[in-house]
Length: 235
Image (cartoon, rainbow, N blue to C red; front, side, top):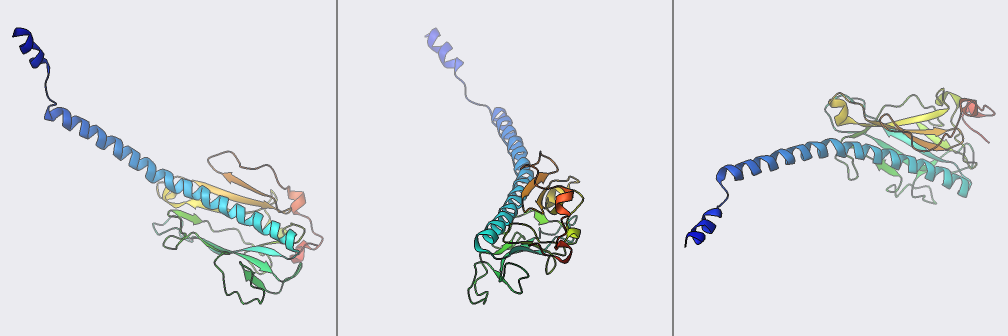
């Protein structure tokens, strides 16, 4: 009997205080995890938006070479209030020209042979919040002036070159489009991915927080090629 009483007395339930401590710890961990997810997701989406834009540029280049006509990315919307509390903004189009040089009309993908532009779903890329494919917390930063062919466009020739005038390229030889993590800016941080495309049509990504993605793809001298670039077109 004494041994039985000792065994029974050694078994005890969990006190309310212990339950409260465990619940508090779980709550703290959940709050930390939630904060990390809230801050990490816009950063991940920003990188995703930049990668998709990079892929669109490469798609244009490949199609221009394969089909023998000009292709372009036409920039549409940028966030003019990047430091404000409004939603993210960004939009661009992927378009096919009607000629290998000096195209006079452009068709948003998919290509309509009759030029009607009846279907524009494939070539309309919008990341603005509240749109079907919007990316919350991501904006396209206002870009430096791009003269292009019709303005604010990056045009590829059938040779795979950008036909933009020399003035569109920076001192390093690139046209740049930057995607920004807007919530990070509201916290006083900078989290951006810049898509850089050279005169030769090669694309690379660069983050202000990470090492560049992709090798060098242009030089200031290469982007200063002026055979007909001053007027907006390469051979």
